Image 1: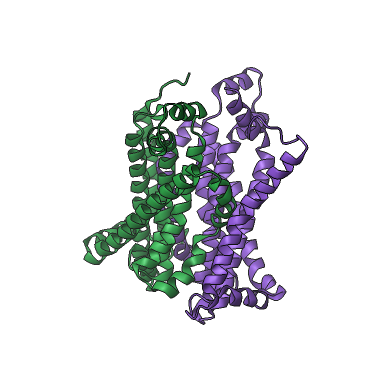
Image 2: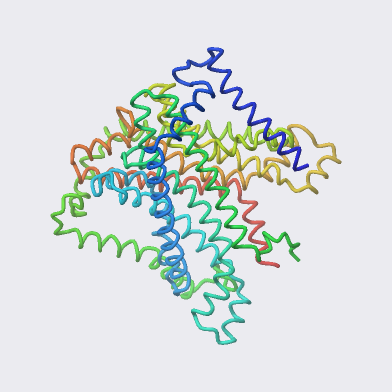
Length: 257
Length: 272
């Protein structure tokens, strides 16, 4: 079953690549707009041999990792504090609901003015966008804590810190992991966007340069790279999630009673 | 929340409503006051006093500007988003219903979804120029993936007992789609639509920042380049408000469409 699925998937991928080769060759789409697969692959090869490409990739990954780390740390701390302190959750709800939907790209002009094309400019956007993903998940997760478990912990005289550690955290962890997975994808989108629009060094800036200099195959090659990066981040986040939650029933596949 | 009836009349209920109102409004009021006071004497060009920003607001966002800049942005967003929703749900239903089709398409779809949507802007500019079509296509092609993949997941996860029952009653074709598949997939579909909304706004702004002669993104970048900082701040506020209004509208629609589902969830949570 799994084998057939893999074979079918590979066939689909092969068909997709063949279509990409055939459509421009047959003249259905102008080659200047959409080069055949083989030329994109060639351009990709040239990119991989270019040291400037690796520097750009490094810049992108640095912005992504730093931004995600800051957002995860801040999101978890803020989420736990807000849900542990009485009344704070209700008091912050309206503010969170208002700030969360503000599109992070609205901050692009501000970031440009404050930090120009520096890394800090990228981080401002990435952290703002990913922070909410984490915070909301932590808040949901804490809400899911079983009142009986919480009361039991209280009656055994566990202090605030011990309750956070042994009751709240294990319950919230699956939610936090979902938040991290979503935030990892959002962070990549925002890093590339910042580079593309602001011109901060990285893959996005390289795509913008390729586009303005009419280097169409290079542009597609770089886009493929960002896609592969996104794919790796998704797969990686899922793997981390599975390991961190190995004890949890959603991963163990235990039948819920 | 549990145990006390909200319908119990009396001073207690009133006090609770007042407390709620206070809790809702307190922090925003504190934050705004803090911003107002902290920035009041500000001479930093980039952080103008809130007073200046508020004063600039009505001058910048006149009816004329709403018509020439906000309306086209919103129309592009709605056009692209609606296209993505229709295409995503339709394709997702087909792909989700047939196991083989799903197996063939999955790797390609996973890859296409993983491409960060903003890089589509330069690509689609090649094909569609820099007009409105380009922006609608960019928005649609970025929004379609979360809708499509969530629909596939939702259609796939239709309760097998329900599917069997429908089959044994001879419910097939369109009736099955409308009565069984789409309702049971709708929570997932809405999760996808919600993700698509924020991607849509991002793409609307970026496509206008790249190449446009009107629109919110264009105007804000214009202000920034002209160092009209208070005006730029008002633009940021308008974008924030737009995001907020759209998310509230989305919630209203979701609550109406998925009312039965949330009711079901709440009742299963209450009685374990």
